[in-house]
Image (cartoon, helix red, strand yellow):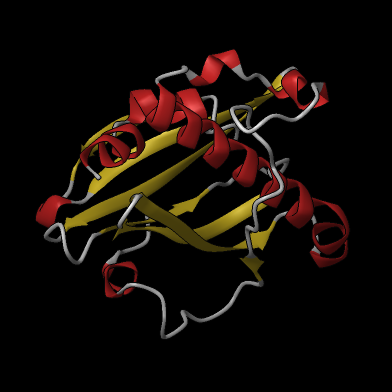
Length: 187
């Protein structure tokens, strides 16, 4: 639990395994343990920039932990405008079950979002979480598995983006979302 928490909560390690970001930096502390941040995703000659706020709750080893975030950008070229999500860390007999839920408002319109972007972002999320899993379980650093390694023959010790990741349409929070998410202010 401590290892997965450390790899996901530190901005400098987060960008090493998460394909969705090129850079994340802290942008001041907010009351009650909230952390403001600035994120970037380089896409060829353009860099999408946005801001966010995150918080984490460390429960005991029996109940697990949860972290949540809200983010936004004014970049007109971003496929995502505003969003929120959470990670739930649940103890299991053989390790940690790491689950996510997130939603966002599309930046390029709902048709293109449904047709392309939700699938692509879901794939990037699954690929990233598998790189994180391998790093936590084996110590093999995520840079050993760049996106081009998708073309390699699959083996259990290699990342795969076949795990289920659900991106729900934008809208209200669900009852199963952690309470922490509802308490986060807009970035």
